[in-house]
Image 1: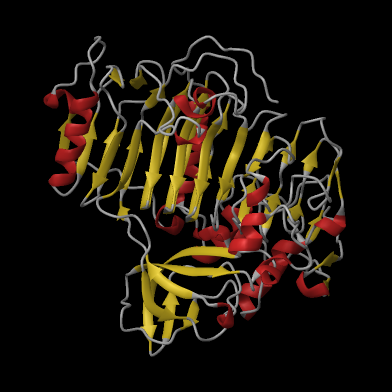
Image 2: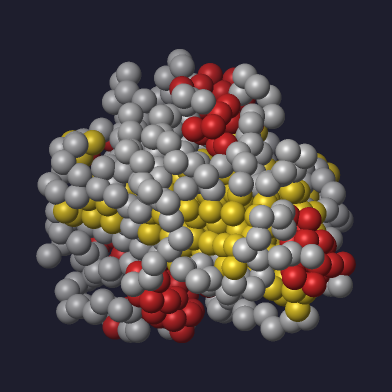
Length: 555
């Protein structure tokens, strides 16, 4: 049974949630894989009641993550088809296929979209001394890069040679093999739009001084850079003097939104705000350039990383074998793919409504498996990290509304909120790791602002028996997380460092917060959820291309 706990709320108020017996729970968990007659968690009941009354819930609404906000399945695009073998690719030989793959992608984009088809076999990239990383600039979008399966006998894109750091003394500057991005600039540009009234988190509307440069359907960034807003986002936590980026540059907010409608000076966003807007701090709206509907499916990406990993030992350790970068993409996806023997599998930057589903991380331990930063509503679900990447489920740098859903980690692997002021993150039914050891420099701390939510997190690690998220002198700094249903190896939390804790040691209902919130918003769990789980079960029994496993070092 859930344990009701009094929790300290922002501003020093004390809030007590009352569990409402059998609060119409069937309306919100019908269709979920795990059903129970147990009472819903008090935190869940609070969210449901706030949704009905229009009040402010404690929990953010995480259901707005993923492709098309979870409202429709990822499309099975049929064509037109651009076969890489028609552009010169030859599977299973010793020649480079990089030019042919890029040519097929360019042809699909020029045609206004289509499927870049990569038949089964092994294709080589970065094979020649004059090879370079590929920056794929999409003008039209609507391009799906599809292989014939990511398991043995399927499609393999093999990176033959590693990259060196672009700036020799900066190990983090190693490029990615493929960077997918819009054509033209990816930088936000200021508009003459200033927010003039306060707005509450989890609502959809801001009042601005002028809507002349705005239009329905436009993608924009709700922007803030403010030293004065530090207390708004940290209180009652106080910044450490070592948090120099925060103290000099202030709070940085980059919430990505779609303008759904305009009514006078009211701008209604499709998605909810995940931060309180205090107009006098200087909030404004900027442009947000993106390209949409880019998909990668059914491919195994293989690198050549076969050494024992050591964090920050070299550029090779940190990123020599880096594969995919999504930059300023929206409503895009990667599914049924694998990354084998890489230092950095996938980074998702300044992107919105991205789904990463049924991905396997295999082979030797590397630096980052999957990392999301600077976007809104990235859903990373049903991933299996068998490599034990140094940074486990990872995010940072103004990422908002990121959801890790049913993610499988190794028992002693670290989660990673990589500083740079992300907020409103959900780790939902994540199995495996530990909560200390997050990345990011001291200058960029805290690791996470408000509303870092652990929902039914399972830990098998024996390394820590207590967590304090705001311990003086310690590097792990989270602004008062929410912990519900944490279970597995017994762990205690310093409750003064939390916003809320419920049912420590016992999982709660609903089992998955993301699925329950999606069902609450849509009235039903959409069919794609169960279909994606079935695909996960099929992949769990599969064999992936691999190389001998090196000894792991998780210093």
